[in-house]
Image: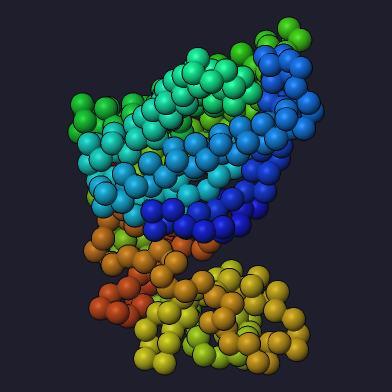
Amino acid sequence: MNGSVRVGHVVGVPLRMHWSVPLLVGLFAYGLGHQGLPVWTPGRSDTVYAVAGVAGAVLLMGSLLLHETAHAATARRKQISVQDVTLWALGGTTRMGRPQTAAAAFAVAVSGPLISLVIGGVALGAGIGLHELSGWAVPSVVLAWLGWANLFLGVFNLLPAVPLDGGRVVQAVLWWRTGDRDRADLAASRGGQIMGMLLVAAGWISVLRGAPGGLWIVFIGLFVMIVAGAERRRAALHTALRGVPVSDAMSSPVVSGADWLTVQRFIDEVAVHSRHSALPLLDFDGRPSGLVQIRRLAAVPGPGRETVRVREVATPLSQCAVAAPDELLSEALDRVSLRTGARILVVDAGHLVGIVTGKDIGRLMRRSTLSGKQSG
């Protein structure tokens, strides 16, 4: 996710934090310390309220992290690749590959909400118990607030709207019932778009009735609509490309360059003679080693272009989407990431034999559409 930085690892997966997380912690701390606690436990000092507000906000972010960690841990147990976990303003996201079975998809989807519900129940019970046994009002209220927040998080995430976990559950159940993953994805994404519109409408009604918090619901609804729309387009693409091998879409031969060249030599000998915005790289043995984008070359300062090797500013092969010629194109597309864009390096027996770009896929889709019209 753009605007996030890597801060560590969880269950062996890179953990990233978006710039909006400190803002979110501040908002929660302010709401709890300056609005909630003074009403629920009056008579304490501002310092007590401030410290308790920050503690509650940090604990809530910790519970959000546990929610996403549950998704990542379950995915890894189900042999699903996990790219990273990112915390941001709407909680968190876990980037992973597509599950291979409906059971695996269901297990990954429900793991997060279950953890939130468990944390919510434990925190709420601890808050009530602490108040009954010790009378410590402020810690008790913070724990109760944390419990209710997690219970709300767990229930809200179970709404049947992609990309919420409940939408993933719907996808898994439909996949299990129909045996068709693409059809299930398409139906669930349509439901997500409808739910997103309902959330936007509910949020605006709240705003018009004088509740500023409705803007947050509007924002969530717009996010759900956008992501569900993107997933609907992806599902339609997978359906159209079903059964198509990578070799049918790839372009060959491929314009490539040596990764050991300096940036300046690569620009003079390779880049200026190509019309592509990204070029594959080959090592000394002629095997693919990565992909370099022209804008990354242009970003290298003039003096450095004579000494910096092109592989130093390229995306390594391990982070590129790679596929074999006879592999299904729909499966290869699942490996595409924002880092390299819609590009798939086609490798056969360790050698680069082609590349698939967004234009190649568009051309294949148009050809498929024409064939459909002719046959109809």
